[in-house]
Length: 263
Image (cartoon, rainbow, N blue to C red):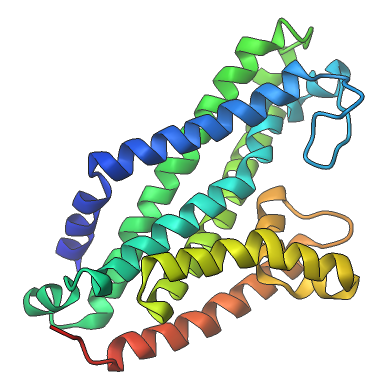
């Protein structure tokens, strides 16, 4: 299985995919972190809920990761697209047959691909966090934000906790994308369904029927990245996320193992 992981990592480091991911993640991190500091105390707000946060709040320990947390959900969508495309293209390109010649165990192939993409997601999250923090320090002076509290042990604890939560959320979105890739066997279909459901349909459904929000997968995945909120607890999101991924993953794994592979 280690060889499967190495082979998948070699695919993931292709310039077209790697540089494209770096550009996307870097752009999102720079955009949302800059909004927080450049639109500080703006009447239009500088958070995704349209609220306004000022220098006093950003000067606290949480200010170190404020921009990083804003971009967390979008990292999940990027991971969903990557996991879905890298899984489904084995069918669309006809390369799964060649993989099975070298490694007959389909479950080892599936596990190896998942481990490799999980490592890729971890690097993506760490890169986004490092860039967001660097931009926060660069813009703190202009926004008159005191960064003294950012170097305290409390800030480091918040940073570690936030990075872990965002990674878990990103991994959940990515796994969801991988499941869709196995079900649809087409990169375009898997990505379209995943993005449409998580960014549009879930928000419409939650707005029309409030009681459904806490049972929807994408909302719970995103809530993990935020560390929970008063309306939706972290433990609830963990339970719901695991339920969706375990059931969906089991179905996708069975189909992956039993389906015939076309030439």
